[in-house]
Image 1 (cartoon, rainbow, N blue to C red):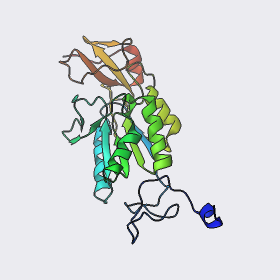
Image 2 (cartoon, one colour; image 1 turned 180 degrees about the horizontal axis):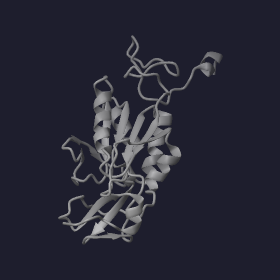
Image 3 (cartoon, one colour; image 1 turned 180 degrees about the vertical axis):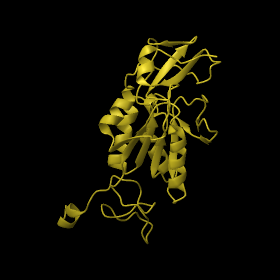
Length: 239
C-alpha cells in the first residue's frame, strides 16, 4: 500500500456524488447527494404519551426534509389502521413500510441503494413497538451509512414501564426530545401515562401490546391520565 493510499479515508457512508468519469468521488470532507456533510447523521428519538402528535410530527418531518430535496423512507409498526401506513388522529396519512420482526432496516436501505434509489433518512413511527434489533440497526445506519434516523414513539406502556425499544433509544440516541404538544388528563392536569381500559376499568396486567383505540365504544381502549389518576385508576366522571 502506498502512503497516498494509506492516507485516503475509507467511506462507509451512502453513495457519493458521481465524478466526471461517473465514478463516486469524495469522502470524509465531502457531501452526499442531498448536499449535507457526510458523517454528520444523527439518531433522534421524539417521544410522548398518546395524542401528543407523534405521528403528525413524523409526517411533518418527512415533508420538511423532502421539500429540501432529501429522500427518505417512512416505516411503521402496528399503526392504528393495522395497515402499512402512518395515520394520525387529525386525518393525515402516508404510505409506509411495515416493520416486521424479520425486517433488517440496513437491508432496506441497501436494497434501495442497489435499485438506484437514494435514501438520506428514515422516519420510524411507532418505534416503541420495534424490536431491540431494529434500534441497533438504526444506530448502525447512522454511524456506518450516514443515514439520519428519526424515531417517534411512546416511552411507557399501560403499566407505566418503559417499552424495551424505547429504553434502548433513550440509551443510544444522539438526542431525545419530549414532544411539546400538551395532553391533558380529564382533570385538567398534564397527561403523563397511558392507561389501558377494559370494560370501563383500568387494568394493570396483560400483554404489553394490545391494539385498541381511544373511543369509549371499543372493548379495549387507552386513555391518557395524570400520575395521580393513573395510580388511582380514576377515569373521571362518566355520563
